[in-house]
Amino acid sequence: MATDAAAGGGGGAGRRIVVAVDEGEESLHALTWCLANVVSPAGGDTLVLVHARRPRPVYAAMDSSGYMMASDVLASVERHAAAVSAAAVDRAKRVCADHPHVKVEALVEGGDPRDVICDAADKMAADLLVMGSHGYGFIQRAFLGSVSNHCAQNCKCPVLIVKRPKE
Image 1 (cartoon, rainbow, N blue to C red):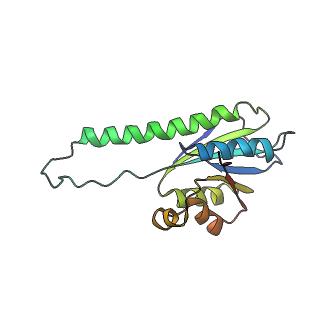
Image 2 (cartoon, rainbow, N blue to C red):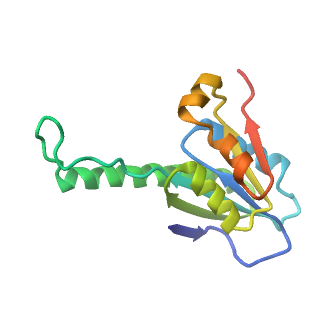
Image 3 (tube, helix red, strand yellow):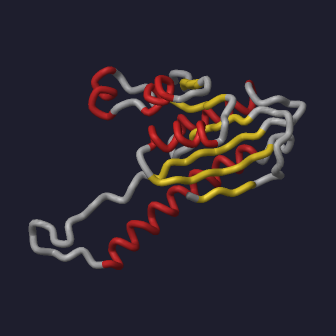
């Protein structure tokens, strides 16, 4: 688990709003919408940017062709995952930088995004969870699952799902 207080700390009287961020445009839109429509312009609110780093795939030591997975290959995969996480959080922080009245924290944890986001909202005592929707259809949701639907059903706090406008 990695946490980071990007701006200020302390427990003011404002709300704690958890925003799920990933590398997709949907989460960036949800964050932007939240800053424009939910966060108090008077200040006092804290945004907690939560990013779920998907667990590293488990590879057998030897694949079907007899190739041994070298430790440097696995380390490279781990570095790439860390870079993707850092880029997603940094991009979200840059969006928040235009709103100096908002305190921003970041939390990056590994695991299934559904569980990471719900657990983070609970741990952070969130007043609200904001997340984007990929807009999957019925069949895609059936095979891939819907993170936003899972969170809406399982989080203890209110969940706001922000859909991107159709283009």
